[in-house]
Image (cartoon, rainbow, N blue to C red; front, side, top):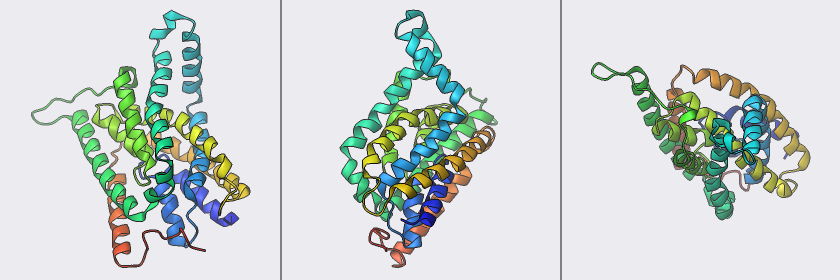
Length: 290
């Protein structure tokens, strides 16, 4: 991997990690279209450390409060009913599905799951799911001629059951094209949470899973086509760009629909199928590219 490739891939990672369009799919597609080697699951996991560092800094006050209250609640019974203490446990519970499936499906994640036909399918299918979830949320918010607006749930309403369901949605993002934020936000909207609450818990829930995955993959950073220097450079780029994107995205979802992302996902998936069908792009393009 050259320094230019690492710069471009780090930029792509930072731009797409927090948007519901799948960063892993875009890293894979960038390499395929450019004729580069597939950066691989290890590169993706490590560069995600950069974007998660952006999450930690952006939500630093919330994270510090949650960790502090949760730790003190282990010894102070009165704090166990505090929302921040409960949030600490909910993040732990929600991280279980992706931890179990990430280890179980490691070989598939690094191989068959990176097939461009599967990525095209997940882009379209999850785009439709996100569109349905967004439409239901909009209907609740504005109501209708014969229907009053419905109050949606906030993070304070999060239960262990919902936290676990969020975790299952997050685990779906092990398949490139699904999108971690897209799957968890869709799940949250379908469970009746507001856009902002669904996104906020999605980002908090991703921290332990992404950091654990990145650390686990560190041993593979210098192997194959990925060297340490370019990987670290890409991670730094992803951090800087990712911080700007998350700040914009949290403002965007406060009063905007997810439909632009839905349309983009579906069109990209259709275009990808068309290119593969026409023979312009091979399903495994990039895996043997020089």
